[in-house]
Image (cartoon, rainbow, N blue to C red; front, side):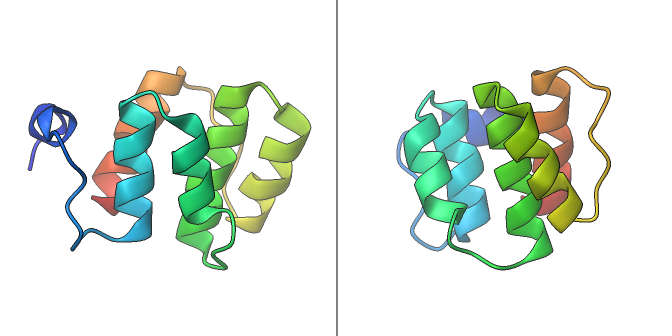
Length: 91
């Protein structure tokens, strides 16, 4: 599935992982739902998406905490470019 196809989906597929659903909800502008889906998960993948969401929120201290948990550097990318990288990794 391409990014365009993924973002065009009208309802999150129930067979998707929580990370995939989180990215989909974020792409639809529902930051809170995206966050709620992954904030309790204890995987490096979830921590990576969690970090992105806090960076998007503007909470860089919290984002850095989650990037560290994900063993990822704070990216030097636009939020859109980072979202696309997360899509490539996890969708």
